[in-house]
Each structure stands twice: as structure tokens, then as C-alpha cells.
Amino acid sequence: MLVLASLAEGDKHGYAMMEDIERFAGVRLGPGTLYGAITRMEQQGWIRPVKPFEDRRQPYALTPSGRKHLEEQLAGLNQIVRAGQKRLKHT
Image 1 (cartoon, rainbow, N blue to C red):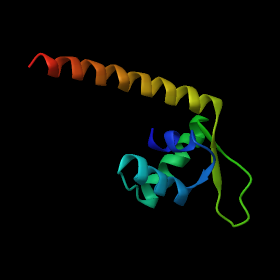
Image 2: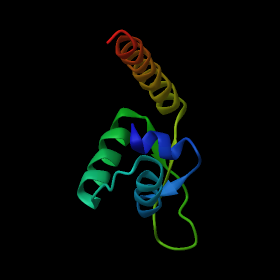
Image 3: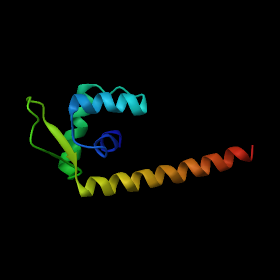
């Protein structure tokens, strides 16, 4: 979900995703974790490689299917957050 959220802002290569995720989520993904996730998400059709920038780094883009999956996951998290907040008010 972190990678998809990063790519929702625009195309990025791996290092840019790691930096963005650390900035917005406070989580530092290692290269093995990130590139394993990229491979799985590409196989699922949630992201796709795009034409590389001037350097050799491979950028990725969120696909429509990836955007839909991210929206569904975020909606589920919102439901959990709302339920948790409601329950905390009763304690």
C-alpha cells in the first residue's frame, strides 16, 4: 500500500519511492523489500514500468487497477480507524 500511495502522486523510480515513503509514512523500506514488492505489484497489474528518465533508473506508474486497489484498501483502513476512534470514546 505504501508503494501504491507513493505512485498515486506520480511516476517514480525505486529510490524516489523509498525517500517519499520515508517522508510521508516514517517507514524506511530496504531495497530488497521495495523491489520484491514492485515485482509482485507489477505481476498483479497494479503498477507498470514507464520510459526511463534521462538516467538509467526505471520509473513506475500506477495503473487504473492499482488505483482501484489502493482506493479499496484505504477505504478499509478508514473503516477500521473510525471504529477504533469510536470505541476509544467509550472507554
